[in-house]
Amino acid sequence: MNSKHLRPVTRKPVRAADYSTGGIFRLISQLFSVFADFFSQKEAQEED
Image 1 (cartoon, rainbow, N blue to C red):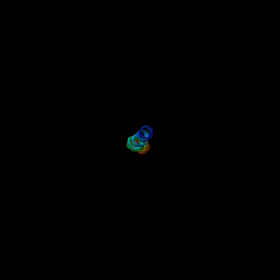
Image 2: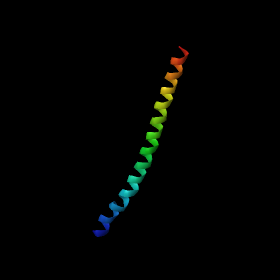
Image 3: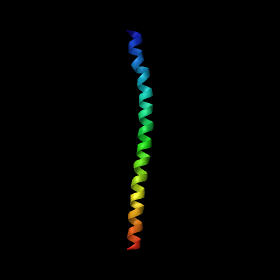
Image 4: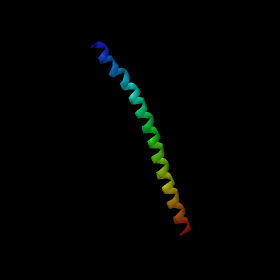
């Protein structure tokens, strides 16, 4: 029973680290998308 309880505790940090890496990658991707959209809008305004 003790070993069974130790298993999820060891598995949780690995899952949290994987989620953290995915969250950072997702945040950078979203930030780049917003920046590209803002740059596109600024360029269109300068043309007009």
